[in-house]
Amino acid sequence: MIPIVLLAATLASAADWPRFRGPNGSGVSGDEGAPPVEFGPEKNVLWKAPVPFGQSSPIVVDGRLYLTATSGEDLITLAYEAASGKLLWRRSLKRAHTHKTYKANDGASPTPTADAGGVYSFFADFGLIAYSPSGKERWRMPLGPFDNFYGMAASPVLSNGMVYLLCDQVRGSYLLAVDAANGRERWRAVRDGMGESWSTPVIYKDQVIAVGSKRVDSYHASTGEPRWWIPISSIGAMGSPAIHEGRLVVTTDGSDEPWMPTWAAERTKLDKNGDGRLSSEEFRDDKDWFEHFAWINSSHDAFIDSTEWNAARVYGSGDYGVASITLDGKGKLDASAVAWRFKRNLPYVPAPVLYRGVLYIVKSGGIVTALDARTGAVLKQGRTEQAPGDYFSSPIAAGGRIYVASAEGKVSVIRAGADWEVLRVNDMGEDCLATPALIGGRIFLRTRGALFAFGAR
Image (cartoon, rainbow, N blue to C red):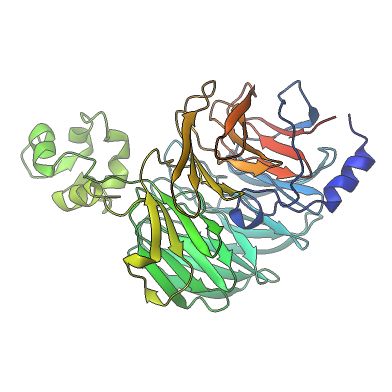
């Protein structure tokens, strides 16, 4: 085991990992330390701590690691000493409201953000809460309830002394800016008609950039006034975009053609009483879509009609894919703002990572694609053969390597480069849904029931 004093000194001098996917959501460690290639429950473990369940990712600021979780009615924020894994404090809130969300989500999916003043957590069933580094409550801002069948997952971000939070939902979407010092609302940008999405904003100079299911929007960071926007298509914007040489790289999954049967075909098959609508009981026979009934039934009147079906049917059709978009302009950008677009092997949940001029995207099935970030040209496509299955965690990078975890806990370590190569697949032996943090040559990784710190001994 590395002496705690030495490890603490190393962490204190390293760049922080202050939000979802680290510095400005890039997924790239700011210190370029070399995390280990081999690690696991019994290999290169610096410390291990039990944690309640949650899908939020760990963050590290000023030697403290912050995490959120749920337990029954409790919404929990935790602080650990990053060097030792010692639990410094645990604070709980009771849910202010509860709504059922899709099985793949939970009450602690959004990742907190932090700075020297403390940590800022967002729970969809409560709102925003700020704690000092010592765990003292500083302020709270109740929010919700939200109208989002799949739940909320966008994480708060910090910049310019403000906490920014994207709240896209079926109705009433908005981007919120809150004073980090006192919790007072500074501005709120209404996003009419945006619909559900789960993407976390990024900051570029004086811009806050939000990716929704129908468009990408840039706002003035200080006032919330719109700057520019461009339409996109998505079956639900996820993750976080990347920035490369003055351009925004956005990844959205979608389809060239409608992905559901026609209304006429669905009604003929399921409308047993011939009233022109589909009740939940009638819809139960659709094995592919039944569990999404409440999403399609956007009016919440317990019946799907032709308007609702057709809106869901074309959801995500159009200009989807990986796209490189200019970061300048005013008003609606025209098609020339997109330098290139790539539409194959697209991830749904995982965000891309842009590292040393190469963009890496990872799709369920362990499919890894490397693209030239300037041109969009394919450099290499392949699989991490020992780690198939679903992917919800996003790839991250440091020390010339890419790290990505599958949902079943297989963590692939990939040598970065145009001709990337899988160096090793480490088995955590437990689900891994969160994105790890990389700092000071250490990997902080959350599994279903534990929090690990890995590093070379």
